[in-house]
Amino acid sequence: MFPDRETAQGVAPLPPAGGPGRFGTPGRPLRRSSFLVGFTGALGVLLAYAVYLGLRNAAGILVLVLIALFLAVGLNPAVARLRSFGLPRGLAVAAVALIVLLLLCGGVFALVPPIVTQSGQFVDQLPSYVDALRRNETVNELIERYDLMERVQSAANADTVGRALGGVLGGAQLIFGTIFRALTVLVLTIYFLVYFDKLRALGYALVPASRRERVQLIGDEILAKVGAYMVGALSIAVLAGASTFVFALIVGLPYPFALAVVVAVADLIPQIGATLGAVIVSLVGFATDLPVGIACVVFFVIYQQVENYLIYPKIMRRSVEVNEVAALLAALLGVALLGVVGALIAIPTVAAIQLILREVVFPRQDSR
Image 1 (cartoon, rainbow, N blue to C red):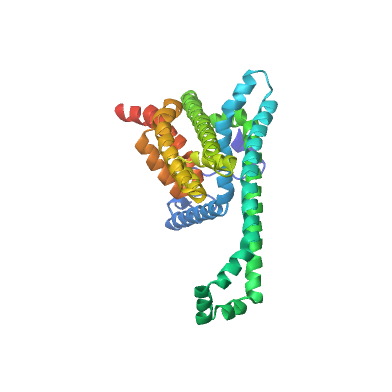
Image 2: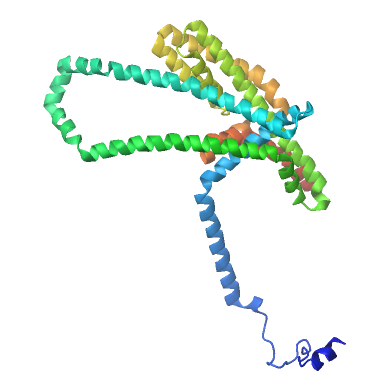
């Protein structure tokens, strides 16, 4: 029927497969052409390089998105708990976001006043320091021997002032950039929390239907482990900060609340965070008084033993179940790749990999 109709309309019928047509015999398919293969490979290389450049240029934004997604996964159990009390998801997300914002503001207000106060004290005492140096005979002899005054005057020119202003502007840019990144992470975290269920359902919908149920079970278990790790890490950090605050009040350390916040934030970093916070507080203790510094060292040595062998196993290992060697290696690798962010996501990443190996890879290997 169709060939007759095409002929009646003036359209030539298609030639038989493999035979000569109106415009001659067809040649070999283009997919066998070495030129086409090479051209396609070159396009693939260019596309891969363009993707690499795009990822490199957007690395900062991608890190912020990763942090926000990690925080959303960790805070989602709190949102789910509030929803179990009858709150709508919007109100639950708003309550969790408000609590996180209050904690951040509390940390900022705890750290900024001591820095401003100590900077003001240093500026006030600076003239007395200069007078003491001018009265020192050794300092005056060095100034005359090496012509330090002439060098200082020659250095105080327009170029030096310009560089100093550049440094000040660079510091201001760093501060405002940090504030912008913090607000970006906060906004992205809120969006991820609001649409968490939809995003999870969308991710599972991309999996073939034959494997969707198993992927969903494994995925939900990974999300639960990440959430359990976040809750456990925050609980341990709060306990460390509270213990440091009480100890600082007892021994008379300056700015006890600020030091407690420093210890709590540092304790969130796996493996090395607790030691870092202990070193900072101990240095402040030694700067205050020698016995106070020794007491700080003794306190943190005892507390870290209690945390490592009593608190941490009960809170973390039952929920995350990560091998200690794997956790240490993952933390070091995370620090090398992404800095503090890599250290924070190292342990839940290892927990997810262990779950996939145990439930997917090992059974598949055993069945062969």
